[in-house]
Image 1 (cartoon, rainbow, N blue to C red):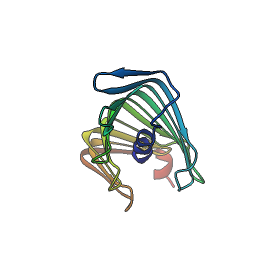
Image 2 (image 1 turned 60 degrees about the vertical axis):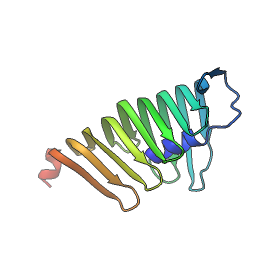
Image 3 (image 1 turned 60 degrees about the horizontal axis):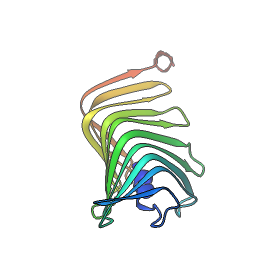
Length: 170
């Protein structure tokens, strides 16, 4: 999911047909609605943000009050909402903060206050508390590491797992 946020803000058009306002450090776009058809891997996505700022050197993109809908072909849709974020084109890091909520079409949810996505290495991490839930479980803990390429998922500490009774009696 973080990968799609990174691609969404990285691929914003240089000449957006949006209300643009120059500010002393770059360009500010208000009420951004941007979609991408296919990223080469059969993925569609739509990014809505209250505001997007592009630094004067075009190396940093920041966004506020964002909603990202990702539609991978043959997989469940995923929605990501948050208060703010930044994307560094130099480092490939996407930092997202504030009331982050992820929800998949097949019933999985995640929440945290801060998540960092390393686009170049396919890593997702945070040191903040996280909550992840699915149709039959809930996991909470502090800190998260996800390697999307190797499909490794770790919660660092204070882990609590709740499994639905139906699974225990099977």
